[in-house]
View 1: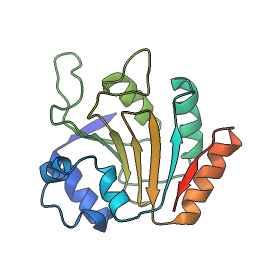
View 2: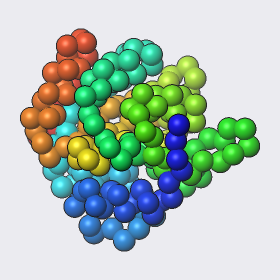
View 3: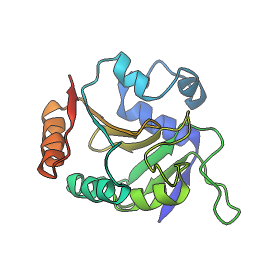
Length: 178
């Protein structure tokens, strides 16, 4: 289902995919600067945003899977978070900060099983807990923030508009940041 990735593997893929990370020398330095999303905001990378405050977890993940189902990532999807401790332990095994998932449908399964989300308020993580999905081939970056937000960054504004239209077709609004 997944393969562990080291922080350096995640960081090197981030740098290869996004020039906004060229100024950083390590994953640790990147995290010390604040949330990974800040690097995108600081370089004015276009994005869409939506709040997940009034949506059930099941509905969000179902719509998410439908909206992103056409994305082809031949090397898999890289899911990582911004904690140094690794993902929550399951059956005595600690998972590193990053994992490679072969299918998009594995993302919600993995997040449900290993993320530090509140059971009652599924969209709220711990204070320093943003979960990020890197789609290296399609040059997109998705973040599920600890404040219950969904962000999708891409330099391709038409791709962002298409994603926003897809969300809207399921009666879920997105706002643009470009």
